[in-house]
Image (cartoon, rainbow, N blue to C red):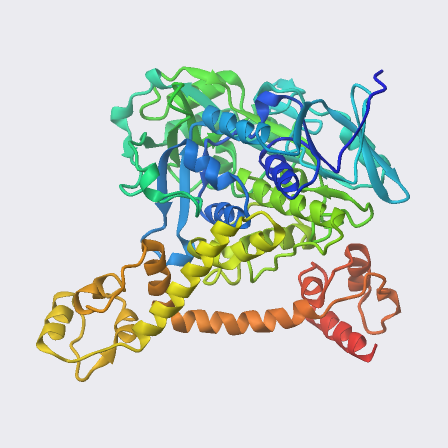
Length: 623
């Protein structure tokens, strides 16, 4: 065995979306960083869906970018189709989604890592965590080499003791046929870390020339492309886009699945792990939603350098012969040639309630965890956690307080709070409905909410920060001008209102009052607002939203103030819940195990009632 010993400030285990963001954050904050991967070809790999963003996930990508992360920049460089989802609804649920060229995305991110100062890449499997007196001091690799470090971040994704399954076929590999990481979780168990078994899955890939697109509905991208990164010039990314396609399963498809359901390892008991509720396999959908006579199937290109097509909506673990029959029953796929079979993958991950809000383990100082290894699902959730874990590992070494985003500040705050506070019995997926304050946490204002924090941390440069200050000033000044600019009930104004289907005036009103009418907006009022300054599109959007939804936003801000009061009531780490009379036994046990940082966090733990919180508040006040 090797006797190599090396030193670093931070070790990152895994180079998926969480690992890349964690390593880049640490290195950019001045930490000597080493990132380990089972294969350098799997850096920022997309083993499942070939896209970034989507409902609520687009919010996460924008927030990662606002804090100084890389995912938004990388997808802006490598997308092949882009679309803003939910445009017909309010701005709180608008979410950007882009199809990626998978190979270009991986190649581009690897290049960023290779060119980043303070960052080294190692193709080695980490097998052991070295802990002394409750402090992480290093890691050991399969080759026997030891890397001494001040902090380590586990971003193992779905590789830990991974097993890929379809039908009777079971392969002990990671996603996409890559090597699994088979040793690390044994080391973690020996340190008292609780692990669980989760499952996810992916659909088949089909050769493009074997698909009849004439039987499908074409899905085009937006005419005007909106970038993910606040630093990307929108004009620089307007380009020809690749189409996706929509088709549907049918009763024949469902009958094939029902007849062979006993051959599915999901239903035969061969798969032990718990799968994601919000991304079910096609056999799950057919059995659980028996009343539905069809399900959507999106045909998505894997890239411009390949003819492989991703069959979104039809992940499966059925045997190969059943998969072929099932896919070929779908309109347009009658002659489909499978390039890669669909499969389920189960893997080890942790119970994230062992982590602090900083994503550091409660019982092992200097050890952090991020991404799907924390029991979440999705590239975007992983990237968000990786960025926060990287920031906090670096800040701990710097002797600074961790960055904690609460539920009122960011979707990232909701994501992490849910993971470390609530019992998650399946892979966690971010959704807009999980965010109580989603009117405030829009994807369009992520920079206004978070970029100043990124600047204070050291991930946002001076030029970008100064641009943010100018943008904030322009929004404030224009909002005030609009609220204090009045238009008369003149013939010109009345004609304008009539043409836009809006009620005519009986006296002069402010432009702000007109904007709050559903049928009008800041943009449409340009015709009767000659004093309007020349402002960028994003500033105009913020002015429009802040004025049009002012009543709703003000109401939500009052809710946030109440929320903050509970979050500010901190609970000492050494607090003895067993000594509090009036606290129910279940609450004592749950609070003692998960050690919430605040009354707010305690109130979100399953098994802790409002009455228990009242008892806690009285006890803390008396202390």
